[in-house]
Amino acid sequence: MIIAVASGKGGTGKTTVATSLALAISESSPVILDCDVEAPNAHLFLKPQFDQRQQVSMLIPEVDESRCTGCGHCAEVCQFHAIVVLAGKVLVFPELCHGCGSCGSNCPEEAILEVSRPLGILEAGTAMDGIRFSHGVLNIGEPMAVPVIRQLKHWEPFPNGEVVIRDVSPGTSCPVVESIRGADFVILVTEPTPFGLHDLRLAAQLTRELDLPAGVIVNRDGVGDVGVDETCRQEGLPIMMRIPLDRRIGEAIARGVTIVESFPEYVPHFQELYDRILSLSEEQQQTAKS
Amino acid sequence: MKQIVILSGKGGTGKTSVAAAFAHLAAEGQVPVPAVLADADVDAANLELVLAPQVLQEEDFWGGQVAKIDHLECTGCGECVQVCRFDAIHQVEDLYHVDLIACEGCAACVYSCPVEAISMQDQIAGKWFRSESRYGPLFHAALQPGAENSGKLVTLIKQHARLLALDDGYELVIVDGPPGIGCPVISAVSGADLALIVTEPSVAGVHDMRRILGTTDHFGVRALVCINKADLYQTGAEEIEVYCQGQGIEVVGAIPYDLSVINAMVHGYPVTVHQPDGLASEAIREVWMRVTAELVEVVK
Image (cartoon, rainbow over all chains, first blue to last red; front, side, top):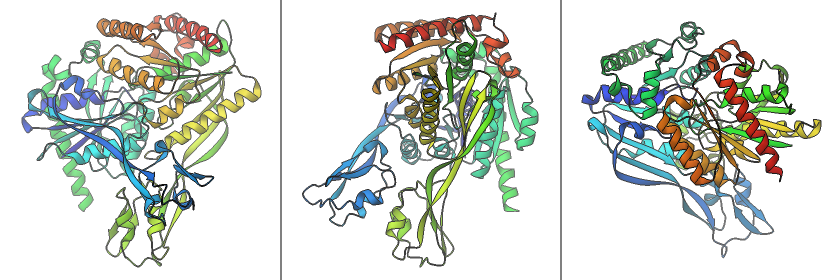
């Protein structure tokens, strides 16, 4: 069971939910994947001891000038203007390269090699309560988050992870798509404010396009109250849990302490959330089959 | 004409709330600064929700391209699947299909197909808008959920904002930036004279503030920091002050946690309009004064 925790709007409480959910079901040996590789935060709460590391890189072209004839075919096939030919000399713009390999495979002189360009790192280790933790960290100045997320998902430093919880970045564009693809269920964490609900609708649209079952958690419930129930009804999303607006929760999170550690009365709520996700996910599968 | 971009690293720190207040203060504050506004958070655009824009112009955004397989020409050789590095082509029964969301538009499959059965198709990935808001022209966009090329759309929005500002004599472009540090942020930072990092004192906020400051530094853009929800965690606020001092970065204000910001949002206004006497509004006016003073410095 892979559960992705997404939102649309930033700061609604994705990491807050992901970390408390993991702790509440720690007996099921969950694996946490922090896919927010631009601004990873889950490790600040779960405090893993990292003992596995892997560099993430992508392949970019390097031209063997002794073989290159300056024909320009590489520049023709490149859709991203990452390789250009000026006055018979080839220039590569690594930040624009998508690593597709097309230039190299189409070079008539076989003059293009592929070399590794570092993008970020992956780290894994055991966190509190035996939770197995991994995350990706994008290098500063590096635009492309997606290859790092992709490699994080494929890494599997912990085989046999029955429950995987993916903490996702805000937004609805390609890093979010990569993070939620392949999940069995998406939790959408929202706040009942105009910004929160506006972005929830976008995130809900994304889950529909990817055909992923989803449910909502309303965080800071009571802060704005602008029709979150109505929005969720319109989007066909069940509200699975509500976390009230409570400055003490905000202060605990600010200190880097999870909800369930500060307020153990939330443990059964997060366990119920997990059960609810299991049954909703099963329901969706049944509906899909029939 | 100067350009300021509002960033954070962590999401939800209050960039848009501050950007909206700046738009109001630039137009109607003590010292008016004619400004063009740009919402660079293209996949979750919120600035329009508090600026009441009238859309004057709406355009399609053509993002990248995706591959399309002509099933009549296709011989089922599977070469395309072999060359695709993005797992975007799958065989379903006898036919090969391109996954439009996974396809990166690299066209490697096009060039590998022995019977030229694949072509690239332009894709509409969203829309962008030129609007007149309560406080000046606003350029904003709506990227389709799941679309790529957000960086390209950010660049487009900013270019239009910049051109209008130059053509019509505006002094400032205020760019409401996205969260994170990746491609749309990098596009938003490009060409800025100043970056205002709106952070929060939580451990996550401080962690991500360091990363966004690393990013602005990497691209040679001068940064200022303002601490929002400053009284949420005193230790964190102190850490920010110490870190910034060590890096030679000015902290230009501390905005207390104040629900008036949410109240204003619910009513569709910047907080400095809706509750001008509130603690947040007072603090934001101070930040605005410091920022405008810095913008003058930037020229020198």
